[in-house]
Image 1 (cartoon, rainbow, N blue to C red):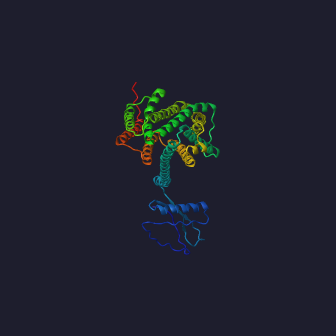
Image 2: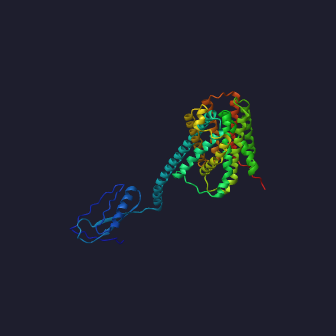
Image 3: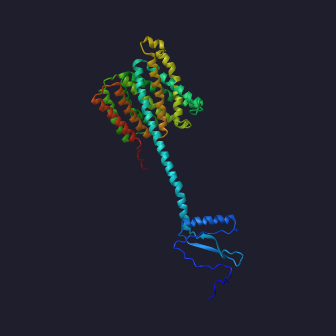
Length: 419
């Protein structure tokens, strides 16, 4: 057998003593001065890898030199190169990628929590503004029996707020063409009539009764959608209308403040408001895709003020002056403050409603609107101490339960008929 190499031990060289290796050897590579900086980096990286994974197989390289100029050692290790198998490499890559994934998951959870908190705050503001609007509006209408003038004031305050936001770039000012204004005009007309009829009803009957009647809006929505959009209701939707109509009828029969003017005004409000929704789908769906809900509402508010102001002067005259209010025995400052609060809350709750609609589905918004009506009815009964009989409360509850059922079954799509 041939030997691998033959060495002659020089007397000037120290004798090599055998070294006992432990079960877990640890190599500390020594870098020669003549090696480049890249070799040094390689040695450091190799050392780190070895120290982190001692179980990996190693291969040591030796520099054999017969020169006797160096008295330290004949065998100098210059690098400890690990034999990293592909599986180990993949294992390192998986661990490295796991960190950003977990971090991304935490960011998504934080973002989801923030969105939930913002949505909850918007729903709370929606209900709060609605409560204050109905309370202060009712107080104003009880003292000042001119609903057209009150409605104009509410549109005027909304117009000032819209122009303020557009002027100071708090909300982007839209570029509207003449064709767009012509398409929006029918929506502004029915929007004006809807709010006017609501104020007329609130001036005649209790707030709780007005909102009980307005709970029958789904009934008008189904009829108008079938007539003008060709959307036939499903049996589930038709079934949900039964408790709505029955509950409103039961509450109307037992209502202490019932009168026909207030009843028909609330019904007319339902008809016009749902006509606005149908027209919005029919007209705006193809022509006004560039307008979001808040922008559309802002334009409608301005147009409603322009449309109703001349009608208010013609129908009721100029009655909201300090001289007239003083002659009528009213507290001018108190009436002005309450009218301003009601107008601000009127615009604010509708603005927040559209902000919520941009964040949730129409079904969720409809359910939230049903809950809002319950909150308004209960708060108005408490504030105004409205007399409510058990039968009246039962009718209101049945109607609101029907509205909730309608909002749930409306998303059930009819099964397509097989060809």
